[in-house]
Length: 230
Image (cartoon, rainbow, N blue to C red; front, side, top):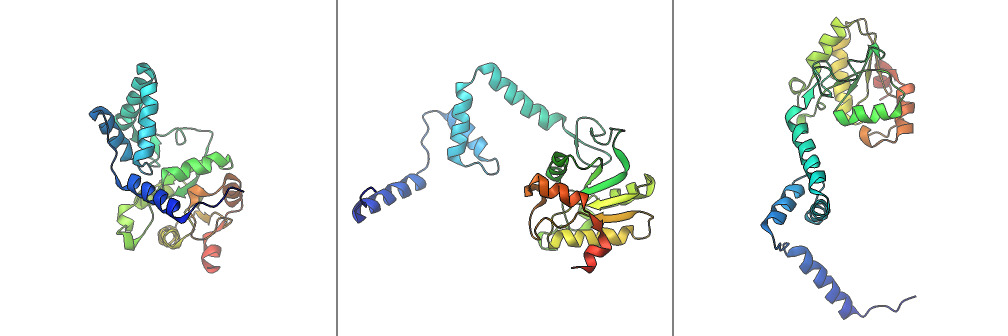
């Protein structure tokens, strides 16, 4: 076991770390600095991580970096949203809605595009989706009018949907959204279910492991049963 460091030495190390944390990065190149600042604007990316990413790109061939930048630019300029389910798409319809092999009579309602990716990763669902673009949250200033709820109701009416599955995060906002949309759909001849609560209440759907999420979809329950059990 290494000997304990003297208190004075520990204090000096702490001061050095604090000084390094408080002092801004000094760059020898404005090009490098600008690139780091742009990467650091991304969510979850700090200045040190941004610097590592930029230095990594500098080591790559010019052609590789050009392909990278062109892919990002094309993504922003050419990306579309599916006119049917509001998922990300290359054309008017996303690949899921355009696939005739999927169960057209079943719609899984999710909060965002990340949830679509999470459910698709389970390989347990073969229907369609509807991306709300959020959930009802009055404290955050998000009401029903700001979500894709009206288009969901229209789909349920016009597409002869047989089942609508709510796959929203198990929290107060998610339950409020389920209750609100459920009232809108109550007069339609459609089965309304929600995923089983293998996912802990208050958790986020996109962070659930694939096995838990797959079982939740397979063991979905009628919404009225879920509301009564609350």
